[in-house]
Structures are given as C-alpha cells and as structure tokens.
Image 1 (cartoon, rainbow, N blue to C red):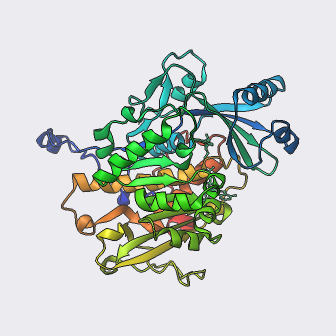
Image 2: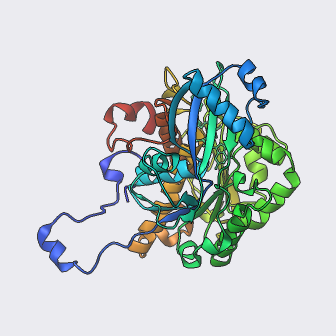
Length: 434
Ligand SMILES: Nc1ncnc2c1ncn2[C@@H]1O[C@H](COP(=O)(O)OP(=O)(O)OP(=O)(O)O)[C@@H](O)[C@H]1O
Ligand SMILES: Nc1nc2c(ncn2[C@@H]2O[C@H](CO)[C@@H](O)[C@H]2O)c(=O)[nH]1
C-alpha cells in the first residue's frame, strides 16, 4: 500500500523497514494487508466521435446512458465499423474503472465482482477487458457465464458530451449465490453504482448487489455508492434517497446527480442534504472542482489554515482540516465541508473527461483504505485515538482526488496507465502547499 496525501517522502508511512539486520527479527511480523471490493457490469467501452444526426439515426438520447437491444446494437456497430469511426476499445464500467484506478494509485489489491465469459477468444471483448485491467485487481471471484460480457458504446460529440449506449450481453447475470459472504465481510469497503439497479427480466444483478449490500451492512463494512447518471436517479429520486439512507455510508455523485437526488443544484447544498443520509459525501463539479462533506466529533475538529470561503453555507470550509468520522462515532457530531479547485486549474487541453469522476472516487477510496491499513498494522498509533474513517483531512483528500482526476483528463482512457509520481517538487508551491 502506498500512502495518499502530500506527495512528499516525509508524509509516507514507513511501509517496509529497509534495515537487513532488524528485518530478521521481524520475519513473522509481516504487515497485514487489506482490500476493497467492487461490483460491476463487466463492459468494454467502444469510443467514437459522433454528431447529433448520428444519435438521432439510432434513437439515442444525448447525454444519457441507455440500454439498447440487439437490432440497434448490430446496426450501430456495423455503422461504426463501416465508417471506421471507432477511436478505441478499452475496458470500462464505472466500478471496473474505479477498482482499476484504486489499485494503480494504492498499489494494492481490490476485488472485482461481476461476470466473465467462460470461453474467451483472443482479441474478443472479454479478452480485452482482462488485458486492460491492472494485475492488482483480483478477478478470481468473477462468475463465469456462457455468453458475452457487455459493450458500452461511448459516443462523444463536439462539445465533449458523452452518450452511452449499453449492449448488455450477459453483464447482468451475476447471481446472489456468487457473492462470497466472507469476502464482503472482510473488505474495507463495498463499492457499487446505481447502474446495478437497472436490470430487467431474468437478469439477477440487482439481487446479487442487494445480497452483497446486506452482507456489508450486517458486518459494518462501509457501502460506497456512486450515482452513475442523473437520468437513472430522476426516474425515482424518493426511492434512491430511501435506498441511500438505509444502505449507504458514503455517497459519490456529480452535481447533476446531486441535484437529481437532493433537489439542490448547488453542489455544497446537495452534499449537505446528503449528510442527512450518509456519513461522507463526494460531489464532483467538473471545471469547478470537487466538494466533500462529512462529520467530525466536536472535540476532534480542526480549523482550516486556508481563507474561509463564501457560499450557500457561509465559511463552509472552517473545519476542512478534520478527518472524517461516522456520525454514530461522534459524541457531538458537527459537519465539515471542503472545496478544492481542479488541480493546476485543469489541463490546457482536455483529452477526455470520461471517467474523471470514477478516478476521483478511486483516490478517496485509497485514503479510506490507507486508514484501515494503518490501523490494522499500527493499532496503538495516536492517529487512531480518533475513530476516523479517513487517513487524511477532507481538504487533503479533495486535493488528492482532483490530482488523480487530472491524470484522466490528460489521457484518452478512463483508466490510469500508471500511478502518480511520488515526488512532485515543482508542483508543491502551486498546489499541495497552498
Ligand atoms: N473541464 C474541466 N476542467 C478542469 N477540471 C475538470 C474538468 N472536468 C472535470 N475536471 C476534474 O475532474 C473531476 C471530476 O469531474 P466530473 O465532475 O466531470 O466527474 P463525473 O461527471 O462524475 O465524470 P465521470 O462520470 O465520467 O466519471 C472534477 O472534480 C475536476 O477535478
Ligand atoms: N457499469 C456500468 N458502467 C457504465 C454504464 N454506462 C456507462 N458506464 C461507464 O461509465 C464510465 C465513465 O464513468 C465509462 O467507462 C462507462 O463504461 C452502465 O450502464 N453500467
């Protein structure tokens, strides 16, 4: 496990002791490892640039993620092939991306649950998915299916807006009995997305997800939900609010999804409202950066050293130097909020915004998981006198999340091809040390 936070050596926990003599004394004293677990519809993204006429031709609604039938899939695919429009094909899926990016950032294990074709041809989509996933993502628990995984046509227009057309294949055939109870109970987090509730007919993904959520809820494992797309939430915001309140501990959303579920278009107010239901909220806001909201015990709160910010909640960032806690762990819970602008103001040229939010969540998960890792290996550390769920402060995590998203914006794929540099001396003045 690499440690998150400021990308400077002195802030890293000494993970391995390098002294060869001392090491002999500790041969049986190996560091304990933890992992996080995610469930996804296993899909490969097929990306192409299109215009509105193209979307109209196939009856696709701009900006939405929609499931398409076999006839539309075949016609769409033939057209993209015929006109040589496919830019790239790469493993995708909102949680698949998040698990991959978590494993790359943390250099640590995550477990991905979902389905995988039992017969794999070289060059097939199933093959591409496996090849494009970090070897740190444990795929041993995937359930075999006698058919194809999903395809996600990622259609991008001139304004950068993405329209997703999902050809489901067997991606929703994960069965509840394929969920390993002890795997979930021992995880540091269970990560799911709203897309998993979009099933029909014989598809069992929703039941499988609910089974995993029950195991996690019963064992006190934090359930992390990312909302996926506003269109799904808008269909029944009250159902989603109730689901979140009952089953979810950490909520990730962008500002549109935040508005869909809370009714507030201001990301700060949306995050504040979501704190009625969950312990921690991450709300990404594109070029405006990222908001976080959480709880801290009054006696553990820490004042920011940054200027106090105006907003719908005046001076909302006053306690952003606090580490987040579960509300139930606080004697006197108070709310803490943070806002961070995009890293370096955003890149000069954005190659791709697809998956920037997934990557921000991966960074937050890295911080949560590092806290568990530190706690199981150094239980008596003064750090754990506070029963925090994060390793770093809200301010620090949001910087880290923005930093990680930046990396996605400057590459073509939603999945990181490498971790972040451990030292970024030249950048400290401009960002980490601000
Ligand atoms: N146009 C932009 N300029 C600068 N930074 C950006 C821009 N768009 C996104 N970002 C960065 O990426 C982060 C996540 O972006 P965004 O809010 O678009 O996520 P999202 O809509 O959830 O994305 P996805 O669903 O594709 O994962 C932001 O918090 C910000 O740091
Ligand atoms: N699991 C899942 N991922 C999706 C869906 N629609 C879009 N995505 C993914 O969302 C990612 C960007 O956040 C892309 O890489 C897509 O693969 C969907 O319906 N289900």
